[in-house]
Length: 579
Image (cartoon, rainbow, N blue to C red; front, side, top):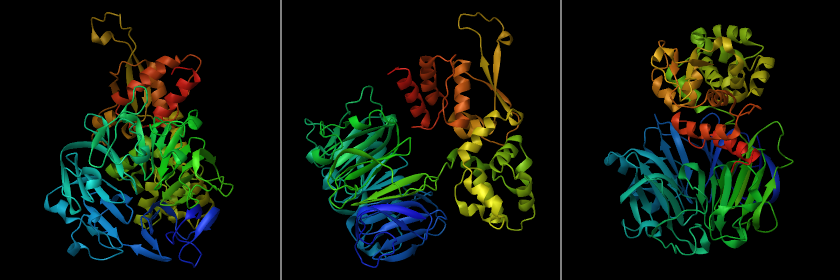
């Protein structure tokens, strides 16, 4: 695959050069032999996760395949300044580093050498299950299943009065319950949200890097509660929040907020407060990435916005970038969607092979293990298969039926349910036209087609259409309208319906009355959104009522936090001036 990169890479990325350190002052395209899913940078190396779930470490022009611990599946990987952590789905934590230091969560005797992940036994000893991990230049942070924070490293940076300084073993911070934490690769401060949904910052605030304001005077070890200058600020709308060495940035309700050292805060007119960047206020953003002191944000039109410290040309400009500028490389392949990875002093853009993989549908696939002969068991499964294989469904079925490679067949059905690994299409590589057609398909487009497939819909949402003032003496006299839908769509999209269909094989639920109190017009828009991921108003829709009802629906139907629905409603607000 072809990647676009600039900055100082210090031999920490696969490339064709032979010198140990190289700086790319202008964008350069480099081909790699691996198909990359994720990239993580520490100060001296990069760790690459491929689409085939393999891990490779790149340092000093070496490519080293890293073995994942036996019987463990990766849940999350984070990079510190000189180390990597891996969180397994079991709740175990593993660390890899070039040399021993106390931020690894190990004793010196437990460190078994470089280029391998070593388990942190302290959590096992204390029977602690870890649910989240993070790391900075001096510290490592862990969140357990009881919402308690554990730390190791140079504790005085964050909690000098609470736990031993320079501890190599993780220590629990007493009397602190955390819902979510945000840390950065070289940051000397970090943010967290407590169980009451309040936002706090801990650490150094020199250069106003935390955006906590002039009066907070945050010092190492001091916990400071602060509220950004955002009307009706709600921590549930924080999509991403990154502290770095010199500044901070936040993706909040599809908008970008920034602060920090004036010359590269992204907001030089008001650098001391975490506030909306004026140059980006009319844009809708979908992602945010951070290095050690520079940022990249992605908008919904596929453009990237870059700003921050630029001492090694990591911003692809001649000087520090005071305010974000738009970037869309001429080297990009227009047929591909790109994503970014940032490290200390470097930036890389590469094709986004995650595509539109849908975790809701993959969870459904795992529960049902649907493949091979079970394809015709339900109307929905058959309809999804036909949508994903449009134009070649019968031919593909014949190939699957005649295959003796059950693993390849199962992998293909994982692709049907939203996986984007092209290797899962390997069973069709010898059938060139089929293979090329399947590679070009997008899961989100195929799911959207099912919205109009009335014949395969197997569930009805019953909506009470009586006026609130109507007096109904007999419940049987209630008037209902029906919204037909696929049961699997409701299961994949809504936590409320996941609870209702706890066993997705249950056949006896064919309809349910909706008790949300929403109008049928708003519910029809919501159901269509479940398929298409967009809200399209007609001339008969009341924009203000739609925004109000669908905003409430996010909580009622237990939709994913920071769902794209927020962005869709924001567009309606802007279009009809409802802010």
